[in-house]
Image (cartoon, rainbow, N blue to C red):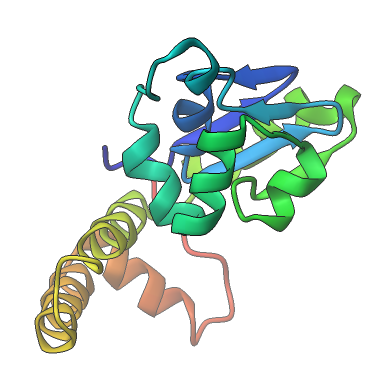
Length: 164
């Protein structure tokens, strides 16, 4: 998906909901939110919902093993420390903060955001040279785009670009 995906976590995020919440590009959690893989292994099952894909990439193998094998519950603050969550906000601000972020990304260069996402998704499957080539192709294509021209033109004028 080209658009920036903001996930807002308020309450218990368990089982398949955990990797779904963590799959956001920006993950905002209320202070009272918790994260757990539930009790998959306690009932003789394995995780699902893309957990074995997203979590090792986000937090590494050892922490994923701990979550999946022990069914540990993380507080929102621990989830932020483990880089599962981008930001923790007071419970009453979860909606407001999510809306602020949505407005920020709505006003930004959407093709640039899509390019960032594409580059980051390819980084684990590419070698250095291939990744640098992709970066070069991406920046050249965006520099020639309407948004790229607007952003570059706005910079020396010391004004905010108008992407829409």
